[in-house]
Length: 122
Image (cartoon, rainbow, N blue to C red; front, top):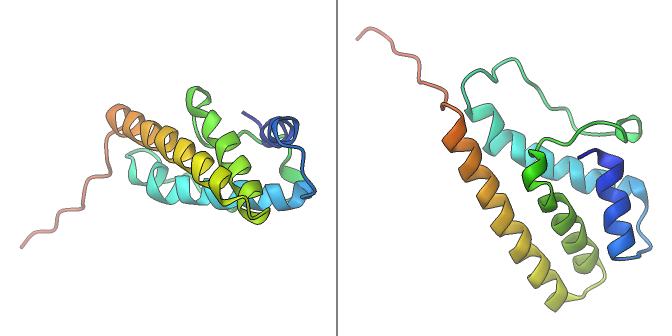
């Protein structure tokens, strides 16, 4: 899923007053978390970096595999609800997000070898 697709879908599902740049920041924070918690812990990803998104990033592909891309929508909807002070709706969305994000992490771990610690002669 591309950055602009996630933002557009969230806007269709929950019209809101937040700018694309605010939503871009939220997606950048989420993918920073995905990078730190999941991707960089897998073998073969040592060369990959993530610097975040900016206004030039609207056509970039988000980090979570497409089969779990609903996590981005749930996350954006949760952020919209949080900042609108719709706490009941926020709780529902963040629970949905947490579930699919955990499914993604489990899938990634099953399909990618973890980075092996460097052994030193002692």
